[in-house]
Amino acid sequence: MIGEGNPLVRCAGIDIGSRSIELVVVEEGRILEKRQADSGFDPMAQARDLLDGLPYDRILATGYGRHLFELALDAPTVTEIKAYAVGAGFLFPEVRTILDIGGQDSKAIALREDGRVKKFEMNDRCAAGTGKFLEIMAHSLGYALEAFGRAALQAEKEIQVSSMCTVFAESEVTSLLARGEDRKAIASGLHRSVVRRASGMLKRIEATDPILFAGGVALNPCMVRYLAEATGKEIVVPEQPQMTGALGAAIMAEEMRSKP
Image (cartoon, rainbow, N blue to C red):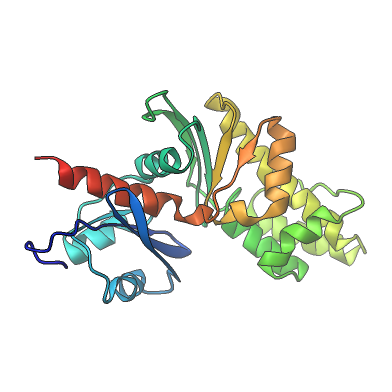
């Protein structure tokens, strides 16, 4: 870390997710650095590698593995809900609704006018409706994950997949392929099923325009289009949507440090 005599005030936020780790460093409200790595089988080793050689005064952890980070580095933590609220407010101050679809959970967050959390819904019980679900389904259909959404958008029809349980859905996809059904049509139906679940969460928190779509799944163009169609609302996607939580944690670390 930077010594106490160093005049710079650099604060880091680290978001340790089930699939990836994001790191953001800010100084007086300016983003100085962004780093990312796969979580792998040893997230703490990956986190240490990301921090290697990086100067900072204070760090705040969020995400799936934040408690492991707290134990390993004796660092404070913040919930993903708060981190995403702050990160979203920094990027798009007008946003009052956030949807984050991560690797193993998804969350919908409604914000008050002052940016504080009003209410939220979270799905962390199973892989249904998450990035992991889409990843497994893409593999079942023989698509690379980054090509999965583009293929779904090219479908001339849509085949609905009835099960949202990952195991049963994978079996259903296998059966559909065996019957000679079009891969793109199945891919479209799978995306629609995830969007239906996300739309339900957004409805329950009374989502308002615009909706900030965060997390790695926001990079999927099919999810963005189908979500806009399902909700009838404007969907905004940050340039690096997966960095939203780490950015929020970094800003909160800066605010904490400035307090007496």
